Amino acid sequence: MQLAVRDAQGADLEPIEVDDAVFGIEPNEAVVHQTLVAQLAARRGGNASTKSRGEVRGSRAKLRRQKGLGMARVGSASAPIRRGGCADGRFAVFARPANGNAGGANPYGFLQDRVG
Image (cartoon, rainbow, N blue to C red; front, side, top):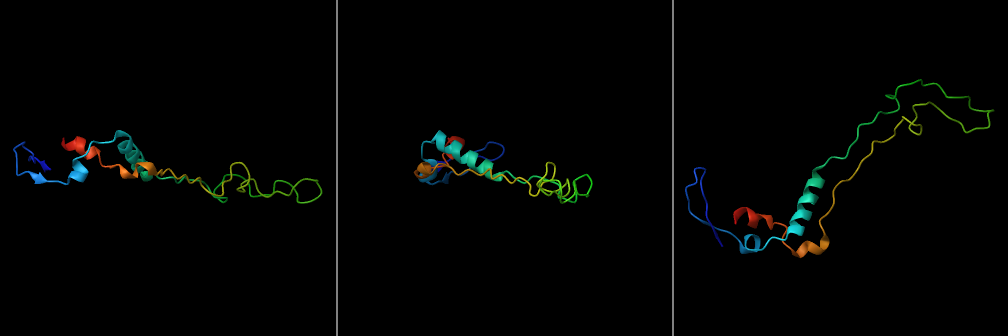
């Protein structure tokens, strides 16, 4: 398949030969959309900023004494198990693979729209 090439001023240059397997197909909108969404989702970062036990505001003292109250033992209010203390930041994986059934379809069908 021959494609016309133009320079920045719009003048025609020598045409180039391109592969029909990539540029000579009818684009599948669903597969193009899945590919685009998968690529954009894979770019996202998923790290959250959280405070460690030493950075949480508040006292370092025990909340109550260890024995004699009939309740579970507790440490400081800034411990990760307490509300406000956080052991690990939430790490979300946003990447989503494109549909495996669409593997035979060309995910680069959008190239045909760009040149045609």
